[in-house]
Image (cartoon, rainbow, N blue to C red; front, side, top):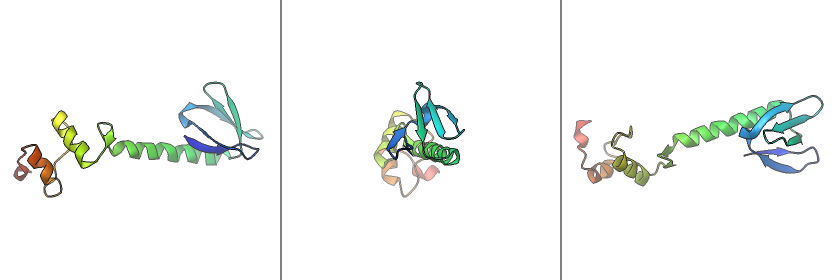
Length: 109
């Protein structure tokens, strides 16, 4: 969700994936896929930057997930156990305890 401001000063959030189109004749009008329209105070450039930043943040957040979970040491251990073909690599030293749990030979790497 991204935060926008109505012309009357009211703040609200919209789903950037549900934006169908934006008109910028006199006012910035956001048309949603469900047919609703919002007249917002932000110019088109600022709206585009906000949507871009939102999507970039979502992309970065997905990179830090392992099988849909936060990439904590426990999640990576569980991912290795359930999916032996996973591209997750056990790093010597830092993940040495995870390697012992899985009976991996860390000296091969």
